[in-house]
Length: 393
Image (cartoon, rainbow, N blue to C red):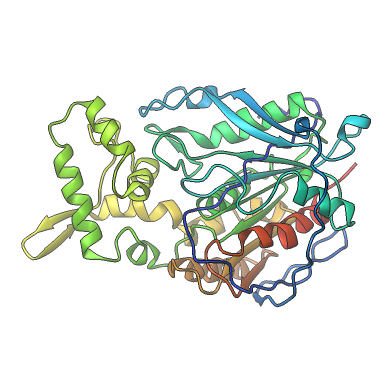
């Protein structure tokens, strides 16, 4: 992709994925303070105390910008995605007083969320800077919900070219309108849940754009992850989806789209539209199960497409091993008590695959749930990690 002249961008749209239990007493490990990231290939148990941040005086509103940017990559979506999007940009304290360029961190929220979960912007980030915990940087948060509630940050003929939107439209806009360092070693990407998957997937596929990745509770499947996921683990869920699709049969396309936007199981609908799209079908995506007498019949080809969304890791990690080795840091971070039990299994599986390839990385397990400690993780670990590994100046 074309890299624009160096300018700075902080776009704040950090978000979480769905309601979780209250935050646990989660503790974390101390991140390295050197410019090189020593990472381990084994799962690290986290246990540290959280340092309370001092509240700071709210800066002028222009320190956090909400910017409407063009999104031509989404123009072909069949669900009517707008071709302009709003991003939030956090500017560090010294931004207005000089001509310095800064590293950039791009944050991808989780399903049905469009902002940074339990992190106050700009106050919490400013407090980290003032305490000397992190260097100044730009934060860019990209709302990936789309009209179906979640884009999964991948290209789909149904939902739009979201991968291209991020690497071309968003990165291009930030570099053209803000003072960035203009090189991948100074761009980090992170996200939570759906956004954790998106961060992993984009960093793996685009080391020419991003130099480091931190995936929080990412949507990653182990060998049985799809079957164990909330989309297929219970018969009543499958029965509900089959009944829902049956009700849509015979409706015109406009009526179908309206129903899909308000589906009882929005996650499954959005996942199917992202990873098993069928533009020729009025229902817009293929579903892998059909009802039979006393059970379900599985279409193996369609099932494979669903599995390859959050899964397919045994093929992808070796295929993209050279890309992953180019990254300055890889962290996968998850809660041991995640309500979605397939997520800890998927993170452990990624650990095994990366270790087998000899790729330096860190997998961190902490005492917490899916989202309860997310704000703490971002403040105490994600931002210090990027402050350490991203090239500055």
